[in-house]
Length: 193
Image (cartoon, rainbow, N blue to C red; front, side):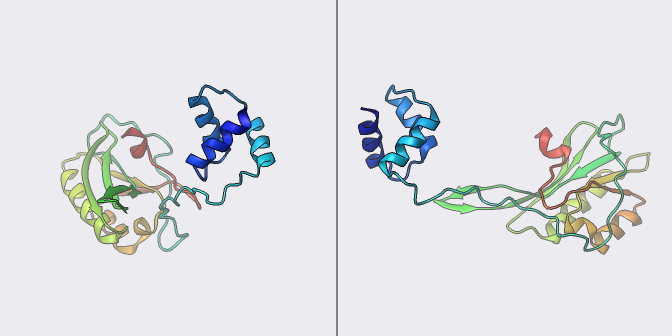
């Protein structure tokens, strides 16, 4: 009986693998262990020919392409002083416009005092211009801080560039980076959204 139901499901869902098959069987009131579903699919010759892959996430890490700053925060993300500790990260997100997938890039600067986004820029591509536009606004908005400011990021290519490093040094801002290698490491900023 279960085999017949699986064949019927497969006619409706031509490329359902064993995980969707388990769920589709549940919808019809048949509760079966996923291992049994795998065995039956193999027996019935129900092979999956098209695979869904998660799309690769954006990774700004390109190795050492400029100046890599030391990690000055060392996970000390709390501060009682507004505009003292600022963090940033470039994040890719997806949306659909008239059925077409788009991938814009968000470049926010977040104040760790209250997790407020103090500036941001959204762009169609991960560009240095977008990052520095948001940086410039963050520099202006945090200039009222009576203490030395720290700007914290990952080791993405844009944060290592000479112009970026120079802008921070010219304002006597401490640059801090955490190590991320071959994976997209998310700063505290991303988790707080």
